Image 1: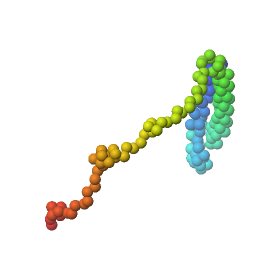
Image 2: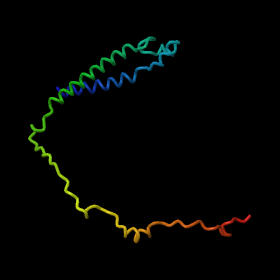
Image 3: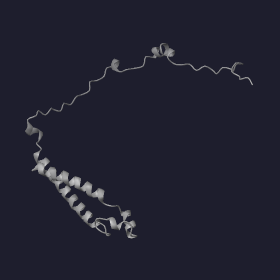
Image 4: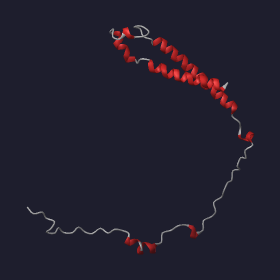
Amino acid sequence: MEQIILIVHMLAALAIIGLIMIQQGKGADMGASFGAGSSQTLFGSGGGGNVLTTSTSWLVTLFFATSFGLAVIAKNQSVAVNAVDLPVPAVVESQFAPVAEGDIPAIDEAAIGQGLSDDIPVLDAPAAPSELDIPEI
């Protein structure tokens, strides 16, 4: 039963896409009102708006019904976790152990003064321009 509903669902979806693609927009009626393009329409000068719109609405209703039917079938086929005989892990609440004084990371003040000074770049004061920096005219 599920397979049949799924096939009808897919066919309805494809038919909706096809019908929407062949429908004309609202602006396409402007040219038809002045007589342009009415000889090449399939449903006459009035257009096929009513036929296409009605069939699209029926297909959308069918698509909604098959979506609802597939949801009901999926709900009925679902099984609770306890019925599958899978072990459900117990919830373990853990308490945080008290932190000792030595476990907290801290900045060593002596290391800042010794080893890090080599890593920090030093900005020199701007030097006075030499005679080589001045272009000759």
